[in-house]
Amino acid sequence: MAISIKSEEDLAKMRVAGRLAADVLDFIGEYVKAGVTTEYLDDLCAEYIKSRDCISACLGYGHPPYPKHTCISVNHVICHGIPDDKKLKNGDILNIDVTVIKDEFHGDSSRMYVVGEPSISAKRLIDTTYQAMWLGIKEVKPGATLADIGRAIQNFAEAERFSVVRDFCGHGIGRGFHEEPQVLHYYRKGAEEIVLKEGMTFTIEPMINAGKYQMKILQNGWTAVTRDRSLSAQWEHMLAVTATGYEIFTLSAAEREQGINPCG
Ligand code: MF3
Ligand code: CO
Ligand code: CO
Image (cartoon, rainbow, N blue to C red):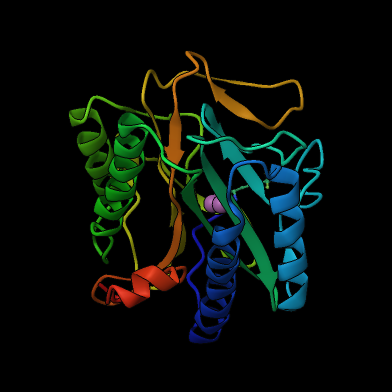
């Protein structure tokens, strides 16, 4: 299957879906605090998603069917943490990943949150991962290749002595949750063959570990954790390739207020 090119009508729907995912992530921020469970945060997101007249793409997705509305990945969890009754505690760092479907199109984004005061090293991991995502985004324009994105992220993360997760990647997105292409966050041979074209839509969502990149999947069949139990961070934006660069569909309220232009 080739990489799909979205029409103007498709892009308009992805703008709406992306903004909804961003709104969920804005909404949940104030509820992240010590003593609350990740299940409670998931319930709140589920209610909010419903109130905005869209649905979670995660619930029932994949094999085994994913059981919750969001993924909440705490500390050494890389991704696909399943919300449960464990309470957050001061110093925890977590990624909340939301994917909604509105009008047939997916909106997918994730951010890091901190409980109270994180350690200096946890903060450095979170900030480095955020910068790495942006360095990847800034490579996006027609004629650039997936190798440019992977290299930009990997070079930066490894210069900070962190490692880039190999087993999960960004992805094409639209009517499908996970479409072609796979967007690796490190350089692998062959990535230069995928040339970006106007109208492609995909996510950039680097997972960066404080220790080594190796992971394992827990018994629940979903949750990925670092093998060495080191901390892991992730940020995710969903975007389109435009004639001159990119348009981000999932900017946060804070990013919009900072004057970050969705089109660079
Ligand atoms: N939102 C994740 C991504 O960025 C995928 C989650 S799949 C789920 O691709 F089933 F775990 F929700
Ligand atoms: Co994604
Ligand atoms: Co996601």
